[in-house]
Image (cartoon, rainbow, N blue to C red):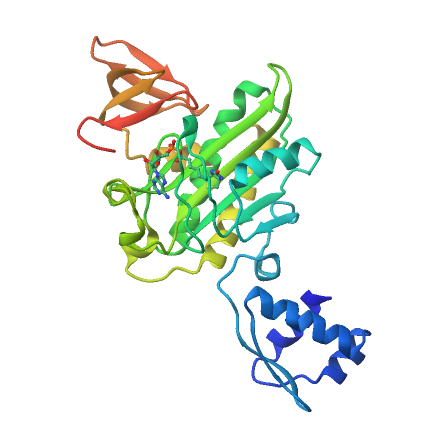
Length: 328
Ligand code: BT5
């Protein structure tokens, strides 16, 4: 009902809608209308209430609530079950609990702020309030568990494509970073549950620094991290970006499920790779090895040439890749 009232207010931006009219149209009492209006106000909607005139929408909050996102989303199933928090420890942690409780494929968990946002290998992901997109997607594809890390590249290609719609040309640092101006603007954390043969679920967490200011990237994070606002020198609409991201994600993910290939995704990751042709350090289980990145395989693995001339494949999920002289 609240959604219907909001829709009516949005469709009549310059008009007062009387409580009586709303109550007749929606078939609920005026007291109930008043309650829903108060609940919208509590969410941050600025609504003018004038006795004998009614209600007029003045301003919409910059929030990624269900009411703001679902009407703009063109997906079939990604995001249709929408779990929203203003603050949570980690959306990935919550999504894993929900996936275990039987929440279906496509459910997303989103929060304006994370108090314990997580990166890979127990690292911390800085997630300040209202400044970014901190979202996790529950996936339950019928694939062997060992194929699950490939899904990370679907996330990377989806973020890249969404940014492209905003005229932002990003680079992809295999397997889970999106880079702007040699700094990290987005990170992806793919977690899974399953046995060798059977995958129970995947949770893909995506964190994008959207409107974070430079001085908000604390603890020297500004040396390796950036935001869309810092690079584009203007605010970016988080709602539009989130919808575009989820739309692209569903397209790529559907193709993967239907045909079992990652052709488009790999093409995007190769074409926009910041690593191919570079000398890097591959860090795995505390060991560092120098190598040159040659290519990305059709199955998503990184092909590298070691200093002794041998060529090898690197699986995502277990490594970090660093440039010889800096982050990339
Ligand atoms: C990642 O890990 O890049 C995965 C980040 C995933 C975050 C999302 S947000 C929604 C969902 N819920 C979660 O709890 N997590 C996911 P990794 O490659 O390990 O990179 C982590 C490193 O990036 C840290 O050690 C910092 O150096 C750096 N970092 C931390 N916060 C950052 C930020 N906001 N922007 C850029 N870099 C950051």
